[in-house]
Amino acid sequence: MSTTPVNSTPQEKQILHPRNLHRDRYNFKVLCKSNPALKPFVAVNRYDIESIDFTNPEAVKALNKALLKHFYGVDSWDIPDGYLCPPIPGRADYIHYLADLLAENNNGVVPTGNKVKILDVGTGANVVYPLIGSSAYDWKFVGTEVDLIALASAKNIIALNKHLKDKIDIRRQASKTNIFNGIINGGEVFDASICNPPFHASALEAKDATETKWKKLGVNPNQKTPLNFGGQKTELWYPGGESAFITRMIEESAVIPENCKWFTTLVSKKETLPIVQRALTRVRAIDVKTINMAQGQKASRILAWTFLG
Image (tube, rainbow, N blue to C red; front, side, top):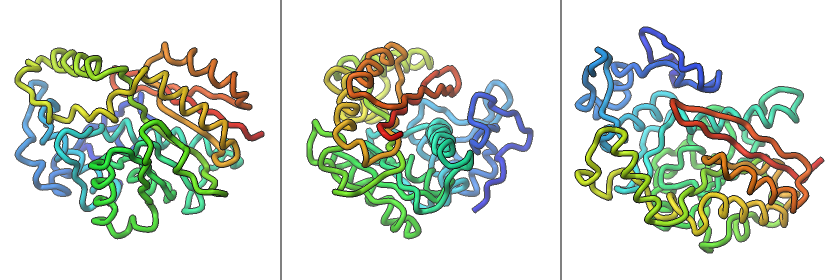
């Protein structure tokens, strides 16, 4: 598998993690060789640079297919209409910052190989985190999913990529309220858990946020159908929003303190942090870390906690 930077005139995206393979501009000539279906979507933009229309879900999906094949050896990848089509560079950043966290307890060396086991809470139809992590560090993953269509999609991606069969296990979360409960087997231990939680509090809030995004991109949201990579209910919203979901996760983690060395989650809203940090104080987490990240104009952070000394 090639990991040659896809940019004939490198221009680093300094905000991405140093090991992120997507710090340079996309080289669409190289990417179109990995996925010829991407070629019709590529055009020279007003800055005289080859690009795609990022408001076109089919173009974004074609780009993702190319990136996953070229950089991560994923030969077959697709998602059902209406499910999240995630930006690969940002997802890769989470994996690399997690690797740095694990290195802190490994003499500063990032642990690699299939003895490292990661739990991906809400892996989604795209199962992107396990795809990146298994390729970049040869880690083993367990992905969980409550949505049956997303579950089937994730399992299908693994089935179509035979080399992932022993690296990624997809499990159904039968409960719509539980996160860890019912997933982790007795005596099973993970090096870390990861999660990209739903951050809206209701369907209406999610709809308003999507329309705002389209307007910022200069697109009339009424011209976009609900099937355009906006995401499904379980991907976008949860009663009480991001803070409620993460608080629930923290409370459940306290019940299984020895089953996971590091619990982690993305926190999209900075105002969520004090709420969930109070929850961590209540459950007496031994160590809590906040790792800042940024992609483009979007700032985010990883919250990590452990009950182990």
